[in-house]
Image (cartoon, rainbow, N blue to C red; front, top):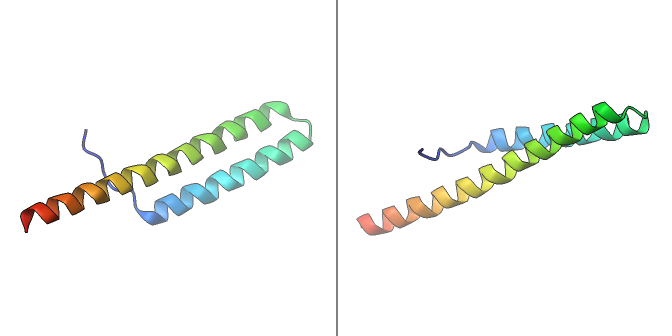
Length: 73
């Protein structure tokens, strides 16, 4: 499967969503609603994982593209 570069706006959007989910989970835990707290914590962790994976993939693609450009010249 070919890796595709993730746009920076998507990464920022995922970061904001993860932060929002974490705050919502905190509010749910404070309201003693453990189930929703766990669900939103899981979503926040998932979104943070997507952000980390996207940044790593973007960096590796940038390195690969730089190597290809240097070999062509």
